[in-house]
Amino acid sequence: MTISEKRLINALDCEDEALIIEGFMERYDVSHDEAVDLFNETKKWLWLASKAEELENPLFIDRPLIIIDEMWHTFILHTRQYYKFCSDHFKRLIHHQPTAPKVKKSQHQRMLTEPVKVMKEHEAKLKSQYSAIYDHLGAETLVKWYDTFASKYNPDYINSIKKY
Image 1: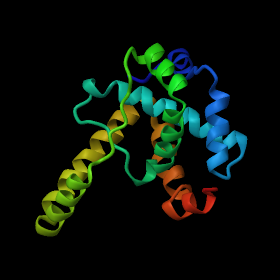
Image 2: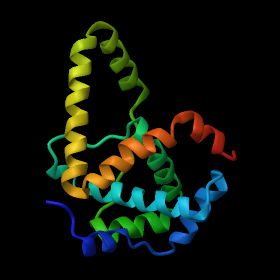
Image 3: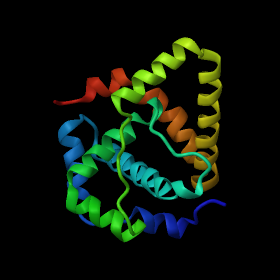
């Protein structure tokens, strides 16, 4: 079942969101409209992340979603707004948990020793994530995040628009 339009609009409501938008624009060379769009997509990601306990597998930020992660970092830096947003909409804080270096190293080692098994596991995680996005936010969001964002916001492009 997808989230209703009214509930989505409510989930995206954020007090003082101009501060977060401006903060992102200070760090990245993007238009105001682009920053607003990225912030709205980040809030949708946070809404979905708040449902993580209901999902089969935990959500994760992969390469196509790096720009959402960058906006999330900006949001977190505005601690009062981030805390209020999470408290108001989710009744708890949505923690940002980057993959630890030790885990990355272990994943890399497994990829070298068991590439087929690791790829199958990754495919299953991706399928689960795609399903969660599709089921809760719809096909348009899935395509936007994994096609449009994947094409536009690749690591090279993100580095090219970084101001500092």
